[in-house]
Image 1 (cartoon, one colour):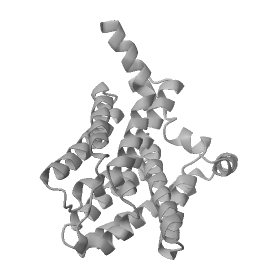
Image 2: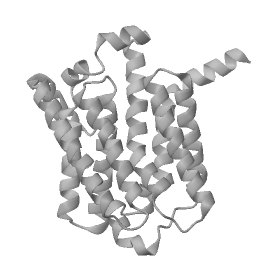
Image 3: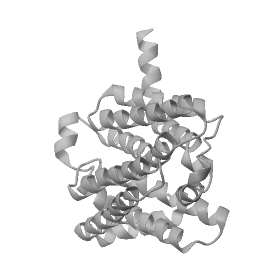
Length: 263
């Protein structure tokens, strides 16, 4: 995180108010759950499923945070940073837009509300799941990075996979395949299954293959895609490939050592 955010997070750790901050983060997430769902009911042709999937994605984050599931803070933080990056990109590339400033600000609230050591203790510091999966601090930190980075890739994957495109069936199948692999990979990770990492690696590989050709959304939906993605990079394979690759990196050393041992 940037130094300013890190310093603010340290102050939050000292202040406490974990329940209040949890409620604030859950409230902010619920805004996007409701907003995306309502937009999906009246979206342009082909975009209803995009916003419905985004609503479900934020719904998972809301449940994880509200129920204090150990991965809830990581997942919600990943979505928050994805929204912050998108808002910053829009403001830099297209100038001042109040609605995008609010969009990024609400995501920033989620990221800050869930930051800090005391919030970490409340979620990933729970002894029950650590004991069940025999996780030490190093393992928890590694898993946190992977879940957070994978969650950050989901909005881009959803837009790329489900939005109508002009490239044809192959491009659409590639997007859906990457999205499914990423979703199953996250599921495997929180269940401490090794195939979760392999699934994320597969999603990263698929996204990387299609990164050389950026999706062109249907012209009839141009206005809607401008609001969702200011550039093809933030709405498709390139950013998803980068984030998913970064998500797999914490486990790269273990994978290499295992393969050498088997050889």
